[in-house]
Each structure stands twice: as structure tokens, then as C-alpha cells.
Amino acid sequence: MTNTEAEAIESCVRNLNALKDCRAEFIPATPPSGFAGDLSLNGPSGALLSQAMTCPRLSAASAEVVIHQMKSRTGDIPAVLLSNYVSETVAVRLRQSGIDFVDAAGNTHLIKPPLYLEISGRRRQQRPPRADRLFQPTGLKLLFLLLRLPQAVRWTHRDLAKGAGVALGAVGTILQGLSQHGLPDRDPPSGAQLLAMNELLNRWLIGYTERLRPKLYLNRCRLGDGLSLTGLCQQLGHDRFGNEVLIGGELGAGLLLQKQPVGSVSLHLAGDPLRTMVQLRLVPDNNGPITLLSQFGNANHWQGWQPDELCLADPLLLHAELLTGVNTHGALADKLYKRYLEPRLAGEPPD
Image 1: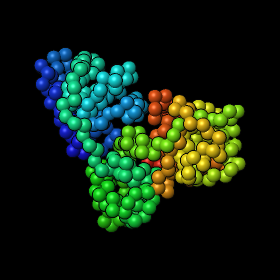
Image 2: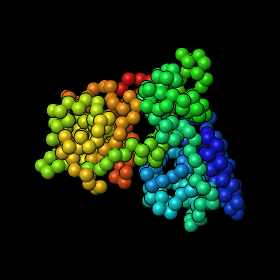
Image 3: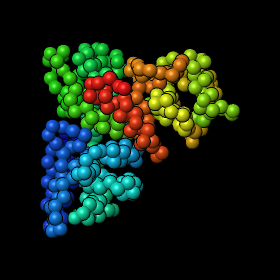
Image 4: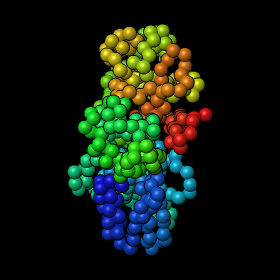
């Protein structure tokens, strides 16, 4: 747990204990899991134990990822979100989704019997916390590489920097931060391995949505007149872009799962964006279904089965893009996770 998360949790618990006849206690998770720990609440009407998930910086975009994560969990124990601050806009979305939350400012939504508590309208009392180095864009690039290729944890700093597309001097600092989240001593490097993989994945998804993806964003487009997504795929295969253009988003996930390609698509580009737009006859449109993003590092592509002459983004990027934006594709994201990401995190080959 980072200092930022610990401070947010401490403030949330303190606010709950300040309420009349309310007793709150946070119990950290041991061993680490996708949740930070348990929140125990006791009041005149009874007691409630909830699994607590933390997200100190909660934006409208990252809230969608958190909602999906909390609703996708298994088990009968209720869940609660602890954050540094939940704006009223995000609070409305959380309430609509049935997500309980508490923030450090005192805003609270707990609607689980036998406890019912609603406090709103409290303003942020302090500046939003700065994420630690691991969850800044540079750290997220390296974390992506480690989640995509868990064996990379035993690589040299130079190979990690090249694979992730980050400066060599940043690797050591990022790895020090990662030691707080499941990376044991790398001495000897041959014995190092990542732990708490699902927790790291959850944190990466939030960080990607909120911090890394905005840095990679290039443009939104629509198809030129007379073109369809099927025609776009044919054009990509005909021109043989290779790994210079990776198909992601809903279209990429549909192709990988061998489903009918419909809806939106994210194209991850390594070449000149303008030249690619001209070749593919894409027209700039802020409401278009095609999102252009820059690639980073050398690990964005999927190394498994691909449709003929097409190159797909890695399932980790496909999964993240499915959870980004207002119109998320949770069901498709879950299928992709079960088939490709869950076996990877467990060290098994996908089906």
C-alpha cells in the first residue's frame, strides 16, 4: 500500500468514527489481493464487514474501470470504495451502479443493511494526492511490460528500458516503487518474480485510463464515405502495415475472440499518424468510432494467433480499451480476461 492510499484510508476511517455511535476499523489484506483489505463498521443497528478497494484519484474515466472491477468480483461479501475525493458527478455514477463509497472529505454512500448512510456536498479539503512514480506514465509503461511478459522481471535494467520505451535512468526508481506492490528482492535476478498479479493489473488499468492513455491519444476519426469496419480490416491487410498499426478496442477483441466485428476500434500507431490516416481514408471527427493512439515500447503487439495479414494489440491493451469511455464493453472485456489474461497472470498458456 502506498502512502497516498494509506492516508486516504486513514481519513475515511476517521470520518466514519466521527459519526455518532459509529465504529469503523480497516484491516489490511494479507496476503495482498485485488482489494486493499476489509472495512469493519459497527453501529446501533448492527455490524457490516465489506471488502475495501482504494482509488485515491478518482476521475470520471477511472470510475468506469473501478465500477467494472467491483461488479466483476466474486463472493458474497459486499464491497466499498475508499477514495481521497469523490466529486458529485462521479458520485451520481457510483450510486447508479450500486457502488458504496467513502471519501476523505466525508462524502459517504453506504446502502447495505443494516447500515444506511448518505452524506454529500462536502468539498475536497486538500490538493489531490500525486500518484507515486510507479503509476505515473513512465512507470505504467514498465508495469505494462511486466504484466505482458512476467518473465521480464528478471531482465537487466537496460533491456527493461528498451522493452518498455522508457529512459534507462528511470528503471531503478520505478522498480523500487514496485517493491511495495509485489516485486521481491531482485538479487539474484534469476529468482525474482511478480506477486499479487491481479492487484497490479487492477492498478494498471486505472492508471492507464487516467494517466497513460491521455499521453498516447492522437485523434478521433470516422471512416471515409463508403467504407466499413470490414473494409478497414481488408485495407489494413492489403497494405501490410504489420506492427506499425495494431488493431485494438472492440474490433480487435472481436477479431481475437472470433466474433462479428462491430462498433468501435482503437488503432495503435507506430508510424506517422497523418500518413496512416490518408492511407486508410480516415476523416477527423471528435465523435467518430475510431481512436488513434501512439504505441510505446516494443511490446504492444499480440504474439499469439492473429487473423490473416492483420496485427492485433496485446489482450492487455484490448481489455483496457474496452473499459475506457462512457460506453464500456464489460461483457466482452470479461470474456477476453477469462480466455487470455487470467491464464497469463496465473503463469498458464491461454486456451
